[in-house]
Image 1: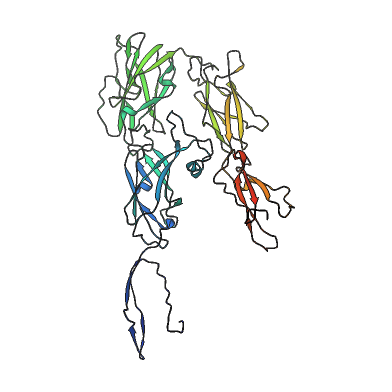
Image 2 (image 1 turned 120 degrees about the vertical axis):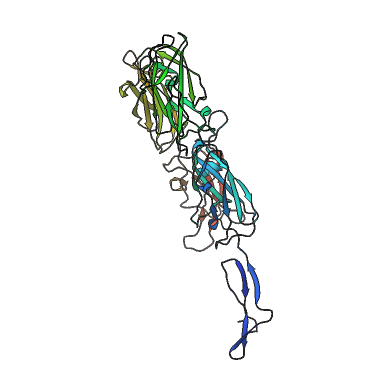
Length: 526
């Protein structure tokens, strides 16, 4: 009441919709009448889009299948949860694989740089592999709906981020971005299936030999986690194996190039009694075992020396890479340093994180030696002017060893790996030394430092300047300036009088660290 005949009326409504505003004034003792033109109908529309109030829906938020076009819907809402009536919001969506990397086109991975916003978003250190990322197409329906469409061909676990500009959607709802997204493999494609392992090319006479058969989908994904459970069974030579749901039948042929004879391949546990065939080589009994990673181990032994051509079919279809060549050598259990190998688990290491290299001990024919033990291996490490990680050698069996190490100090490390030789000594293997570049971990403000020595007393009228160095959690200096460092420095009088002055922060020469300078509003000294 302004007391001059004017009344100010204020109200706030949080739910959008159609309303009627009733305004009445007293008339007489017990009566009220509408003022002129009242009541007033009006429509209340939603306010600006608030990303944390937006909602999303669809199974594609959490699961899909390789190669399947998948859609999810984002509903734009204001901060009170009202659906927006118009579109135009900069919605974006992308899925980041937890393990796979972005290909460089040459069989390797693209590496993260300090200027790569995606690597920074994913928490990947400079020099590590850039994660595989799939971006969704966004269709603005012009109202409150946005249709996000993606097609992912690499199976695995992803983090699916839905954002408005750079803010995640749904922070105040039950559907909060980012979402754990599981992409399952597609159905079996026999022609894309593969074999791996030394036993696919090398074997020892009358010794256990093994390779692994990987059933895959049309995109080359192993069927681990597939909705289609496939059991691999061996179909013996000359046996007709009828199609069976959930079962893939494998047939094998071995041809000895020297003798010109084919060898029958039979199920080790079959009960059929076969008569020797002089026109064929010695029959080979095979055992197929399902492994936890969706592969199947194919185990056998070959009695005859020589070079063989091996053909593998799945459901009558040749797998990728078949036929392949296999050489059978005399049995030799002695390790041989010149054929043993060691490979890094990662291209680089990261401070504070465990890393490892895989050592494979082989004999003079290049075949793994299951008899090898830790006494056959010596690992030494050399570090310049810094404490080095003590390597740990773990015997995994079957000729495999893991060399594990972990350090919180960034820098170059060198590991010399030696294997016992015929003289009883140890000789470095061809791929030794193993050189590891351990990179700093991610930026940590609490570990970073400001060089403020000498600032206890300064002269009025002189520009005050000091430097700040970015470090990781373990105190390692970061090699480059990171955009997320975002330093802020302020200067204020201790008695609380006067204005607070903010520093001008600029990148230091050479790209390492920052320089902060306090200047007044005219660009001079405070």
